[in-house]
Length: 252
Image 1 (cartoon, one colour):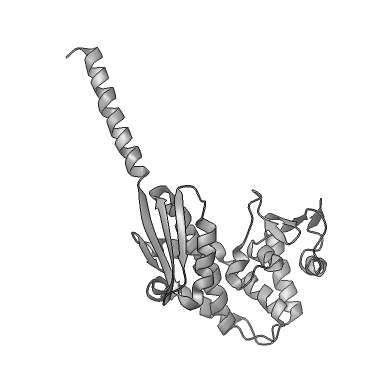
Image 2 (tube, helix red, strand yellow):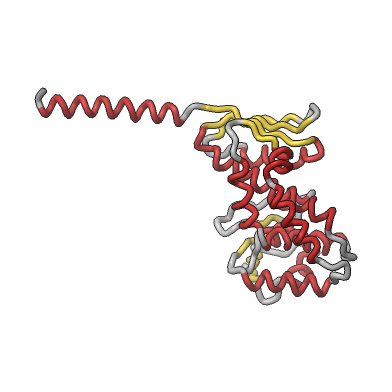
């Protein structure tokens, strides 16, 4: 065989392989994520977060049965995004509910929510690294089952954290703890009206996993060291920024 002919043949074979790999990469797969009905809000967060993501064809949320179910029809390249959203559900949503049932303090509801959010933010990256590999599955993810049977060490760690917080934990203690976390962070978030954005100006909505969307909780969950206010400050936010971000708030 002449060298030129061999080169053409290699090109044809290689091109065929590349096309097959690309075709396999673009195959749409159905992923099913479920949780018990009391966690339907977590699945609603998952649904809204993955809808429109790169590689996701469509998503369907069903809360009409015994369990909340989200079906996602997506290419395999979308799986890292799906796993990251599931990780957030456990690291923020599950942890918030867990700590809410364990931490016994006399703080008012607003300050209590900030404390729980700060406890989550303080170890969010470590929790993510623990959770992600334990979500290993092919196409179906039962979040409550995975949490119950694969994450015992995580629950034990959360119990220890809750035990560290004394019942007499005061508003001053909260301010001191929050100030320590803020001073350790170099991260900037942007506050526009009541919406919080990350450094890439992506809307942050982790606070939805705490029961309701809240700018104060969002800033704390983001482990923000600085807050850049774009425009006026919403009612009530001035006090929060003064108490926890004095000298670290910028107005644009």
